[in-house]
Length: 442
Picture 1 (tube, helix red, strand yellow):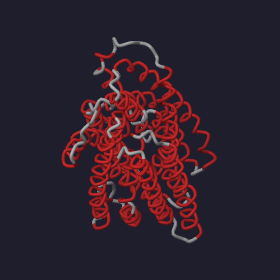
Picture 2: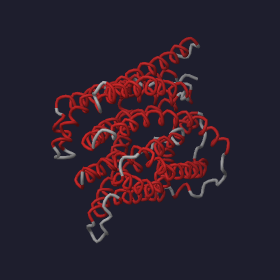
Picture 3: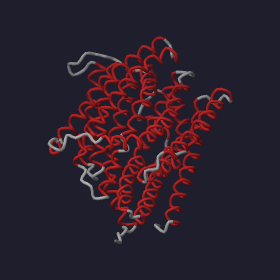
Picture 4: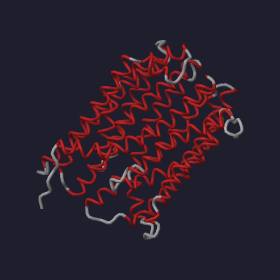
């Protein structure tokens, strides 16, 4: 049977329509973190530095473990491509999400024992520990929401989950304002208010999405252990890849924390701005992973090529624009977060390097999504490890501590590592496409 492939213009239209709600959702989730940074920056420089360091400890654990769930939508999309009914996997996804959340909560809770060893001073240490203790329990809301979102995404239903994420931005700002400053009848919890807000908003997101899934509640309660094994096998390397990548950025935050509060605060803002920009190619990556996964399940290799080309084109266009924005208007961007002149000056220096790696960052995450749709996850994890931990971080450490470049040195290392990773992932994808042609499938 011959399966027609979409034209590039049609593939572009389909990809944008599918990815647009995902983009809004990812931006919503990122804007929650942005809201935390804005409130922290308005509260005090010490709060901004401490919360950034706490997030740098928590995120490598909580976000990387979500990698086990990122395998859900590509695998279910492949099953759809094979003609399988996927409704019966609903409770398996729920059970799997709870398992991931238990591990995530436990490891984040235990991370408080790292804080005295890292030692950022008595005052900062106390704030960081309190934040980690509270926010660790938000793992349950975070993982449940992600599992349900992946389940919907596999069916190319993205609107509900991502509208909830956008609404959560306002809810988070309201919670932060109320808990940190003691407004709207709430107690003034100061820095701890940010953690309570995160706990509350993640619970809100999970419960809201769960209430929209009532039609699946009566589906088979059977737990598909074979599928759990399948998700874990594909998700393990994804989780490892995320850990290597997120830990690279977070380790930069932890290293920069050794310099001064000004550089730490500026680093946190640069990281937040870069991460906000990253949400668009990340969304394209999620969308193309499902599209490629579905086409792969159908054995429609022409569609795989078309969606891959279109996704890389979209990612290139966006990251080029962001690179120009950060390069030409750094002061305007940084000033949205803070009016501290010293923080702005350092932030402008770091944002220059964020501008430099935009194209590479967009390319590597988009290619990773394509490879995920093809069930290729081990090779990308090796590329990420080599690029960041064999090149970027050691180079950044040398430039930061020994060449006198301080925070800038680490961001130069990140820029170089992203270039290396993008090239390596491109080579892996090219090799896979050549294999298709050799097999007469392309």
